[in-house]
Each structure stands twice: as structure tokens, then as C-alpha cells.
Length: 232
Image (tube, rainbow, N blue to C red; front, side, top):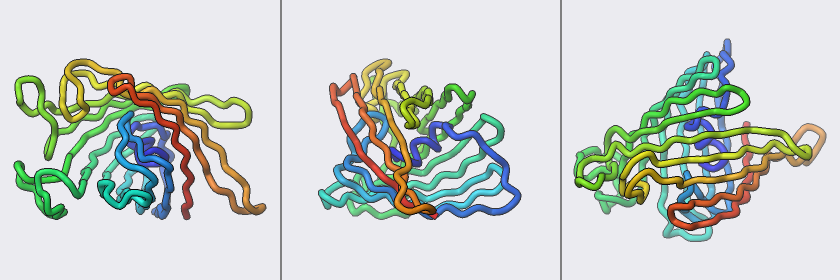
């Protein structure tokens, strides 16, 4: 999610309507899997498959640990729509650990599912983008009263260009208590600076590479992540 899905869910891309169906096939490799300020895995491979048409998109994204086979496996399905700077999406996150210890995918019972369903709405103003995401079903966290928290995450991204490199400054917060994000109240969980650049291999082929320095003030963690992606 560091390089592709997180940007989609944050609504960081501006939609351009296509007259034809456009497929997406790609794979990412990251030195650490860090999502919204939380460490979810070590060296990971992250395949992606998607299709889009006139702002409507459907994608599948996954993550599997390479250096640590015990890392949680993940498979996410996202249905989204973008028009102008506005974006909206619904994502079904699935992990192979959770209430259903057997890790079955097609298990949706409220007390046994490993799925988390999230809705995201965002707007890209060009010079900055804003997004709000809320879990509305599945294996969500609970609040201080031990009720479903409808766990939420809000993010601000500011892109800029400096030194021949594309940069993005990110700030992400959890607005209220939920153990899904380990937050007892409002919490700043993600401060990140990401640099992206395409490394030329031949005259017609280059590899997108990124480096990210990310801090989580809530957990007092600091990460330096390197990643690359290959796609059609």
C-alpha cells in the first residue's frame, strides 16, 4: 500500500475519464510494509490487478512477506470512482489472521470474519489532497465503551517538486478512540515524507522507485522504507 493502494485510498490522484477500458497489472517490492504509520510486515512483494473505465475502477491488491514467512498475508478488493478532483471508494480488506484462525477467505460471520470493510471519500485540489476513511463493517475495532468504533483515519497529502524528484508530505490522524489504531483519543499516527523518481534502464524502460521516512508519534516508531514497482 505504500506505493500504490494507499495513494488510491487517499484520493491523491486526479481522475481523467477514459474512452476505453484500461487494465492495470503490476507488482511492488518494499523493504518494509508500513501503512498509515503502522508496521505490518518486513520485506514484502505486493501484486496488483485492476481495470478502469471513465473514472470507475475495480482493483485487487495483495501483500506477502518475503523475508519473514510469518508476516500476515493480505488481499484487498477496491471499487472506486473518480471525477474531477473528487474520489470515493469502498475497500474489502482481508487478512489471514484474526477471529477465524484457519484464515478462510469466504467467512463473513460478524464474530469470525477476517474482513474489514472501509469507505473512503477524498478531494484532490492539486496543491493538496484530503481524504477520510471509515470502517463500516467486518472486524472493526472497539471504543472505550467496548462498542464498534467505526474506526476512522483522515489524511492530508501535499505534493511538491524539488531537486528533480517528486515529493509528498503526509499527515494522518485518528479522530477518535479505537483499538483498531491503538488510539485512546484523537491521535497523530502518520507523519511521512516520500520521494519518488523513475530510474531509467533503457531508452524506453524505467523503474519507479520511492523512499519514505515515516514516523508514528502515537507508537513512537520511525521507519525508512525503500520500494519499487513494475507494471504494464
